[in-house]
Image 1 (tube, rainbow, N blue to C red):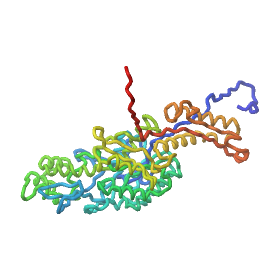
Image 2: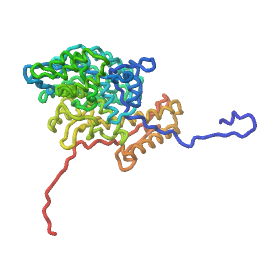
Image 3: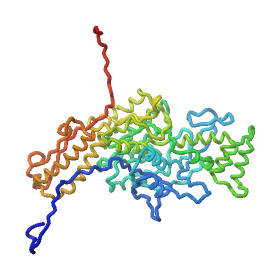
Length: 526
């Protein structure tokens, strides 16, 4: 209280702040998922092209999933891909094939029905996810009622570059997300996918708050020899801007996200059981029980059973049907790793911090890989002298399982920004200090303000150092903070209202290559 304002006798109290302002650490693992959802409606309001924060998978279901119908009807299917069994003259190169009555059948999806966002969200929460933003750019399109041509790239015409870039731009007004993820980007054409990735990296560079996690086209069904062409295509299409704000993972992962209850006869041949009948009830090996069930599905008698009941009946009646469902389920469960990696990063940040590399750790729900990379094969992914673009491998190790085996950004040859934890730690420190300095805008640009800011930032960095986020035996070895006339500012800076704070930090880098040196020693007498 200013004493000049006191005009009447009495006792007046002045309360003074005993403690300075403090730096509040910002959240470090808040992904923003951009893509297509089953629906986007809550309490009568559309949430298409509206960034919405969720805190759990239940929140996601409330905003973006179909409500379940009343019992005894089967629960609503949130994602229903369609597959076709296409007879082949000889054994196809694709591993996703079946032999039925001596004939080879390729299992090919209807590309118009393939989407990844829903299952990526499930993988995110299976791996410890928490807060997230969802940008639904639309709902699922109509099926084409025809299979993908054998050997053709999987491109969904309903997934459009304009939709995804529009959803990305909505995040310009959302500073909280720290990871940008677009699982359905790999369902675009190669050219459109490259345009989207470059737009994501550019936006990350402009905002300086988030990294982008990319999947590689071709990682779903890689050729064991020609997979390097997919890697080269990816590198050719990511551009050169903002590479330190991006990270890529290869290959896709086989998961257990979808269960047998998620795939049934309605996912085969577009729900046309007439095309399923010759496979379950062939003329040379009839199966009357399966034939009767299929007839009841086509023409129900009395009170019809639910889809789940018919599905269970077919599994009991026909071994072939069970084999088909298992094979289709395996194909539907091959997912891009970006959603799972967001969950892994969130878990590691909660346990340690952003300075811990999200590597040498498993992925919950990962059960197989479409290609098992060897050490020599990973070498060309991890370090590339020509493109300077590293790609992190997901590998299988015998006796251990599937591990994330890489922690590099796309700028893999940069001494400053080659590692993901370095990039994310700097972003964490920058944004935390930036938010903490807001109260000092328009404060007097004098020594008192400079010392207050120095003290605030130094206290914050000391706490980070104590948690193991910075190198050095003492805080003085770990960081330095400078702010003052003659050190970081000139007299002109002060006159122009500029206060410059210089922060130097010693960051932790992962031990990516551990070299053990052994040398024989001459024996000595006891």
